[in-house]
Image (cartoon, rainbow, N blue to C red; front, top):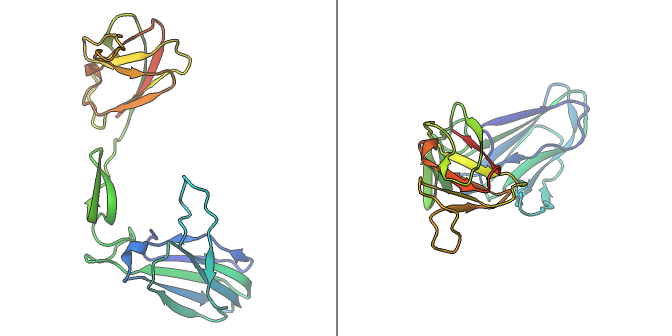
Length: 238
């Protein structure tokens, strides 16, 4: 989503396609307005380009298809009401001064703010993490971001007997535990009576060498571990 409103100024030496600006396609039919401003003394030619492709898709290689406007040679304002994911300005030529490109998204009910997607906290999202739980809804979900001011890292060397991996350490967001990839055996995590039984009747979570697990506990001292003596686990807790 674009920060709302957004304004970028390009130096006289700027040419070519500029950095894209993300917009919220879910705000249709509110859409967004754009403005190309040839600042004092500036002249040249630019286009405003849009794409339906998600440039932030980290799972798939995306070659975006950009649709340019007609050439713009003077200060011009436009509006795009159909859904697109990104907009950018492409500078064919620019001389005599700077160019400013502005984007202002329409907002759903609740008005707009600097978050770029409506009023209040992050809104108009369909999937969100709330207290570690994924919430899906066809309606907007309002969430407030929370985080820890600090975190606690640590390590524990296993023995052949179940033992606490740490002394009392209160947590707000849980812990992520990782087994060293050079471990010679599996790690078994559980309560004070955890064993290395791995035939389907055991009571431990099996952590393979090099693997990790996130556990939403409120204190590290409730986790016990057992495995091959001198194998190591590490953790980061908050």
